[in-house]
Image (cartoon, rainbow, N blue to C red; front, side):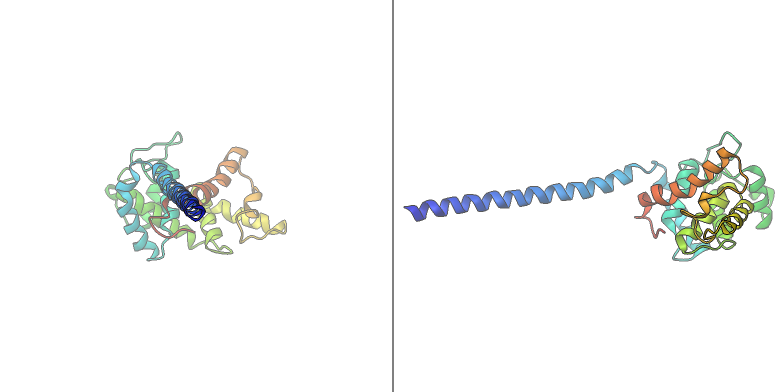
Length: 220
């Protein structure tokens, strides 16, 4: 009789542990899938529509190891994937090119005025990716992440400022090849507001927004 009772107690205990295991597993799965869903929900609804265009442009200009996730995060930051976006200072389109920058970029690439279409999403994505690559080729960094951060700083505020910032950082004994915690700490002469915006720009794109797009391709 005692043996029968012991068997029943053992079976009940085993069943409880099994159910607890299933419950914990369900929690883990829900957390993982919930996290992925949260990231997807944080993308603007228009992002998926332009994913193929971005990837195509990035591979064409950066190669198959293009930092897709970082480039997508930059589009997110610039315009929220809105081809009709216009900023308070007059930047236009998905890449938020100023009219003068768009004209310069078109002339640099041998495009006629009617081919310079800042509001055209395909043109804008090609321009953003191409301008990033142009800047990336003209800056040096301790690693890919820092180098891309310098390119982003230049995209936001101009290559000339990055060159000045690097020189100032070096004169202060800081590593001019490191953006985070080094060059980003100095101001070579920007206004306080412009400096604050520029320092936040690479950080938000690389550290905050990029993780949302890692399912699209490589990041930094």
